[in-house]
Image 1: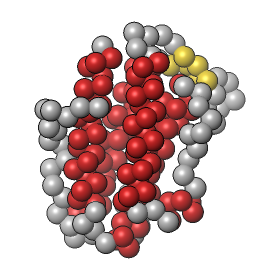
Image 2 (image 1 turned 180 degrees about the vertical axis):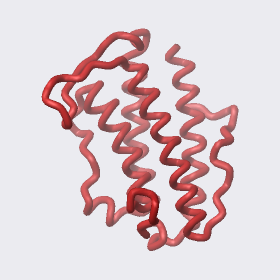
Image 3 (image 1 turned 120 degrees about the horizontal axis):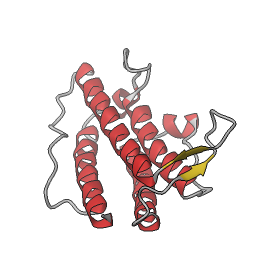
Image 4 (image 1 turned 30 degrees about the horizontal axis):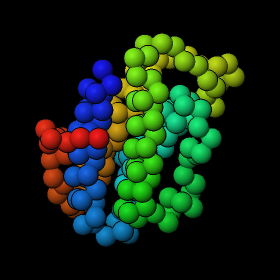
Length: 166
């Protein structure tokens, strides 16, 4: 199953690269503009939030890594597409480690603390991977909608290349 999940994540990375290439053509100021009706967020802030979700759930919660902290407001305000790409490079490393660590243990319960509740929370590695991946696509849709509102015509980011690999 690990091979299937690696291939699936490869498809996700492929769509992410399409989005990055598109965002590189938008002026940095526009990427930082707050877009109404999207939680008063910007394209850059939303994209970093996606990376932080992977790092928090797969890195911090599941793998118990200590170097998976959320981006600070300063980090976000001083980010460009290259810095977001770099953050996703870290995400790719964490996903690789996660896939290796939980190979053949996808439905075992794991538990850890989450910051919004006192008691520990329990879930499965498969749920965490599914959550982070679907969360990325939810926000990818928001990002392309924000870009449209800013006057840009995004490419189809839902098509994945069959040869995409992790």
